[in-house]
Length: 441
Image (cartoon, rainbow, N blue to C red; front, side):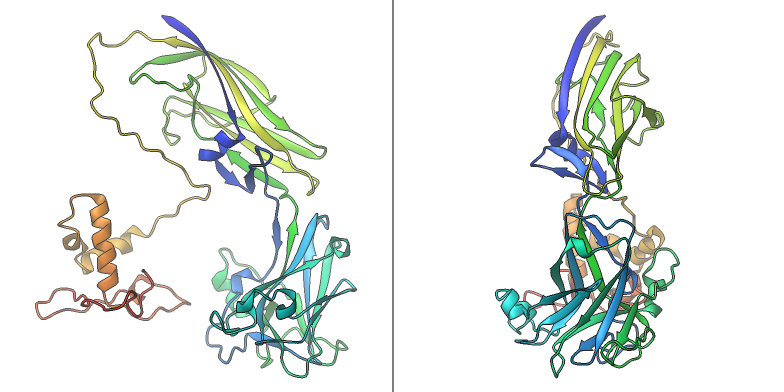
């Protein structure tokens, strides 16, 4: 039995290419895998947008002299290297009035956009669709004004007429937009007497919405924890010989990780006999107690690891820089002495997403497939790609109905209409580039 020693190193760039990240990211400048470096503080996302049944943009608060709005945002830790106030709203065309902001008693001024960002004309002109479209406004704020716990933000303007608007996320929409049941936080209020009294139940310019102002904080700081999952690693290194059968007799792995004060990195590892991570031959992930570990006769040729990164200081992060592997490999005797020739080689690359893929409802798709005779649509296809093109063409020509944005259903869009022969009707050729009512092209 022939034995070989293999040694190779995968730096952070190599680990990033096919790895999976949760609250972690690859930093090209440091060539290291770090915790995410930006955090969004908000409590309006499940309900943002036009509430069902609302008219006249009643979900916007119009700011002018006498009207002030207040928002509280909670910080468990106030530390950050930079901070920005974000709000969703509009600014009137060619506005001259600044927006005043008070953050925990510290006053700031955001000039009108035509002065602050004159080239961002889509914010204050009709050049690119008009200021009636909502925009996200981003305003730098001093990190020293932040504090642990509740942070009070008050916004107002001194213009006689409306110069700014801020969107309100209606409480009635929170359940619809939440994956899990949650209660509205009740951290927004309005004053119409220059801040002497506040009302949290009658927001919006028509005083008819109970909700949250779409005001947020974006903080430049690291997430408290994150996970990196490696691709499957062949302990025998790059194997150029097709069909070579190898066993791992011993292997040694060393992780290169920087740990600033207050940071931690826990390593978990598993072995398998298959390069496919979902194969049942894989062992369970087990914790590694040291950044260097040696195994004798591991249970498989393939290795996969996770690093759980953590920090108690949002201004510091652990840094995974790579892994080095040494292995003693034994070549098994071939099962057959016959000669084999490689006639064709097809070995595509699989890059697994960091977010779990959620498939469509196959039961509904089967019904849709039968109702519109989609098997007949793709009958002439010789390849899967040709079938995709035929389905895209069908989607372009099928009659489209109205979408209910508050209760989306497969049946809202493709409409089954029959021709004189009882077959599903498709629309004819369209002279323009985009067929009216379609969003697929």
